[in-house]
Amino acid sequence: MFKKVNTKSKEELLHELSKENSPRRTLSFYHYVKIADPKVMRGLLYDKFSELNCLGRIYVAEEGINAQMNVPVDNWALFDEFIQSIPEFALVPYKFAVEERGHSSFIKLKVKVRHKVVADGLNDKTFDPSDTGDYATARDVNEMIDRGVTLIDMRNFYEAMIGHFEGAKIMDVDTFREQLAKVHDMFKEKKEEEVLLYCTGGIRCEKASAWMKHNGFKNVKHIKGGIIDYARQVKELGLQNKFRGKNFVFDERLGERVGTETISDCQVCEKVKCDEYVHCKNILCHVLFICCGDCTSRLRGYCSGLCMLSEKFPKKLNQFIFRRNRQKYVNQYKKNYKKFKISTTVK
Ligand SMILES: [Zn+2]
Ligand SMILES: [Zn+2]
Image 1 (cartoon, protein in one colour):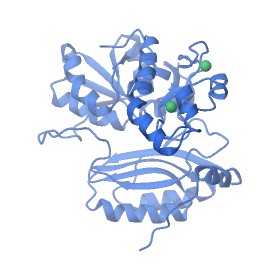
Image 2 (cartoon, rainbow, N blue to C red):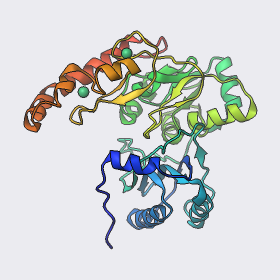
Image 3 (cartoon, protein in one colour):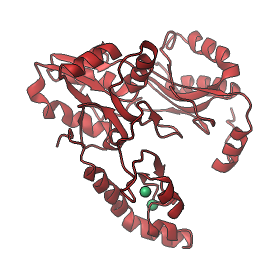
């Protein structure tokens, strides 16, 4: 079977999307469930999602599914009917975005087969990821924070930078894999106490809570549906919001506001409160950093003077420069992260 290969540029795709009249609904869902043949499932999902003009990023693995996507509102009923018709996914809870922007949250449809839906780096055959900790609702979370629970942010440092829960422990890690390897040891004196975990949409915590239990933690809970669903519950039930700043999400929006506060600064000028992440326009660099409007226009979307010059250099020279310097820029922005000194960061 021939798959349509999308050769359009990002600009062309964005232009097409800007002309759409039907609004889109942004959602995410995941489920740890045994999928016998991920390749067959991938084909089934790709064909139907293309037909329904859905966009987003969907991972399928033997251990389950993880989807972040949007659906044209006009096709919603057909989409839901299709998902419910697949036995593995029936009754899977959808999580909807709190805020829809004027434009599509994704520009392409990607459905990929992965070894695992969430890379965990674990090779422990005795570990059962479905033996998870208990769920905490938004109401539980607020009560637990009030009584001083050990609250661990199971996301990467750059995600926690722009938004996190009051009093959360933020680890200086770049990947979930790295975090899983350290977390049980780092908090080992809390094994007998109540520990609460959270992440963006709950999928990482589902696994992390099982991993903590596997490592002897007696009372592990995780926020059901992550920050995304916490925000929804807070809004719906009129609860106090204990999440400060923005929730980093992995789509074109790079963040969804949950509270009203901006807790981080522009990493370029370090003078302006800002929580807009951008990727450096130089694709060889592509470093992710927080950049205010003024700095974005001054640097024309690049992270630095050197990247700005890349426009003028031939490709070969750019490749040479970035092979040698990329880490320097990555480190520079990481150093900046640390300067913000989130007081609760654990070493
Ligand atoms: Zn700035
Ligand atoms: Zn750059």
